[in-house]
Amino acid sequence: MSELKLQSIKGVAKNTLKNQISKEIKDLILTNTLQPGQAIVIDKLAEEFGVSHIPVREALVMLERDGLVELNSYQNPRVAGVTAADVRDVYEMRLMVEGWAIERAAQNLTDAQIEHIDELLRIARSEAAANNYGPHLKADLLLHETILRSTENKLFWMLAQRIHERSILVRALVEAKGTVQDINQIIDEHYSITQALRAHDPEQARQAMIAHLQAGFQRTLLALGKQL
Image (cartoon, rainbow, N blue to C red):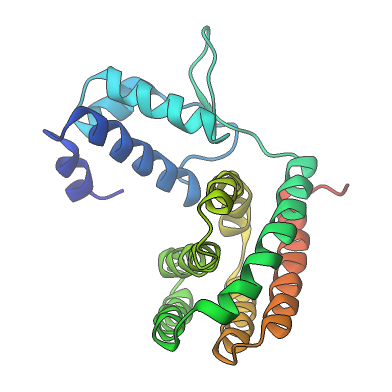
């Protein structure tokens, strides 16, 4: 979270303010700056963002609805914890949702869209060698969101968004404990997906996505240090 971002929050409209703070906190969770189970100190966030407590609390209520934050009247809010059952639930839903969506994506995505993702993957691999995983996170989220949006089905997107948001906690586990080799493996899997998308082959794309998600499930369980 950069100083420029914090300064840019000041002075914006109320609804925009809570949305922007929500996004900033979500980014802190995704990058594991705020870890599962960690207390969130409202005073500290309000001071860093240069705002009152009110928009910070409103942002946390939004994140609670997304399953990312736990609110308690008698304690500080906390980043939601993650269990092996949570991991299983997220990946079971992602297999169903993204397995269907990618078949649509293979038919609907343009070569320009796919090339943009590939370019981000190339940058991600280069930066991962220097232990900078930020570009990988950007490419990862863009790839999966682009696939989900490509269905051009508004009702589906509403459902997929909830699963997508909940998966942030799960992904953060791998990013926190993963190695350069783990990140490169994920990038290789993403390349397999974009290769199938470029061929506009729905079945090949679905198989690549299933293989990626199944591998992700195992990586996440390993990061969690538990077995079902």
